[in-house]
Image (tube, rainbow, N blue to C red):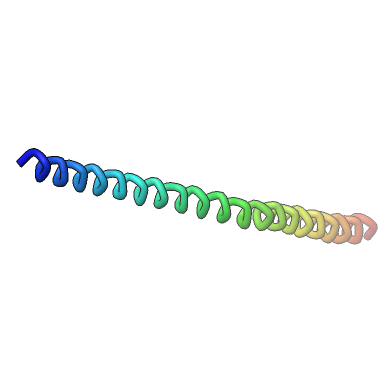
Amino acid sequence: MSNGTNDVSGAISNLFETVGKLAQSQVELLTSGIKTATSLIEPLGKTASDLVGSLLNALNQALQSVSSAITKK
């Protein structure tokens, strides 16, 4: 009787250990995915901000040209 109880206890212990390992693997996978997504998005953000800065500079130069043309008349 005692041996059967130990088998059930061992099986339950193994089951909880396996579930814990699976949960830990899922968390590690999620963390890795977040890190990868962040490393991909970061350069895009920098490129987008550089593009906006360039567009604003071009617009500013165009407005200065128009302003200079109007002022000279």
